Image 1 (spheres, rainbow, N blue to C red):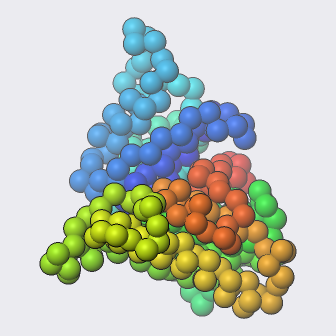
Image 2 (cartoon, rainbow, N blue to C red):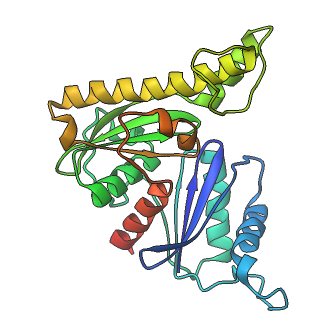
Length: 267
């Protein structure tokens, strides 16, 4: 089985694959203060969830047969600790960290390809493999990112916008009478109280942002809208998904699927 780990700014997604089938998926907080030993204990605890509690697992094993580990990260400090985990506990297990020099099969047409986050390249690979090109990936997380993939599977560029949660946090800090609210759909876009006014701005405002940016990207591609597949992913995608008119598909495990594909190409 293959363990895939997607380390994001706020959360880390983990998935356990058997072949191309995703057996289990987890989401944990990305904590820069977590040490390599703590990461190992966390991984071991998650993966042993289905193992008999009386089963004795040697200290250097995760508790399930692991044929490989694939990792991508946007947080350098966390990636450093995860490298230590791989070197200390899994030196005999094939592992891959997606970084510069790793073959992804995705040509990157950017002024500086090294600037593009590895998670965005992995998403582009997964989206083009699942849906074909051209396509646009909308990843709704700490930031909302838009990534454009050509008909030939090339990464041709994108956009980055502030995420929903950090925008609300900034508003709460700068607005003296505003506070943090639950990210949920309000009764109406025309709110009758402050809580629902904040929810309306967040849900409908960010949904409109997605629709607007996607429409402009399709126009810039010179393509017909019906020929472009728009794929949503990311931990906060469900918050706005129902209000987005331009999203064609929702794939929560897109990055994990991309990691599996990159691992298969390299190992």
